[in-house]
Length: 213
Image (cartoon, rainbow, N blue to C red; front, side):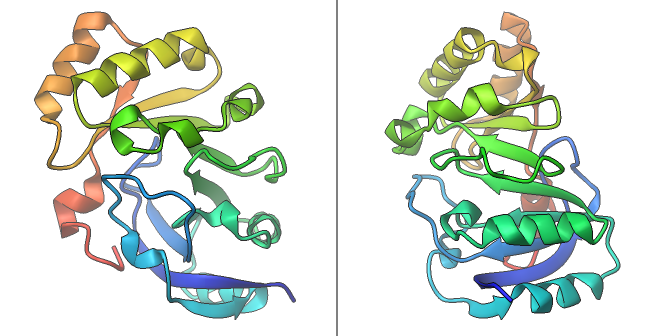
């Protein structure tokens, strides 16, 4: 049975995306090739424990969830992530994948909702964006921009329009926690009539981003 390096498995409320607020089991994989300036899960860069897919499925089932999110780190950095995603779908869960956007999403099981980050200039990792992923997006997927300042917002607005992203899938704009005033972002979105969903990170409001939440 394939194995993966797991940072943590926990049950919480989904803090982001269109599934915000839904009770969800999170499977956080260890490791990430990116080092974004605002990263809030750097503890998942290293450590963790090796688990077989069977062990992961058993632990997930203990929470009797409907929704499961595979996240990181960068989950696609482990090749067996693709196997895990398929196994979770086969088990009957509604599965989403949170990926940083630097790796190919083309082999992800079609039943999985792919939440794709597009890294902005202030993240420090914009040059790592894999633009070839964008034509692969469907209405089942979502794109997320984490914005640090007005320059990031203007850059994201241009990408939104250039790639007609809102016609492909839901687009999420989120202020980097503690960096960009959410009210300012809301006003920019309204001013420009952008077809996006603004979101705040529910888990940070509730639990201050403590591990396990």
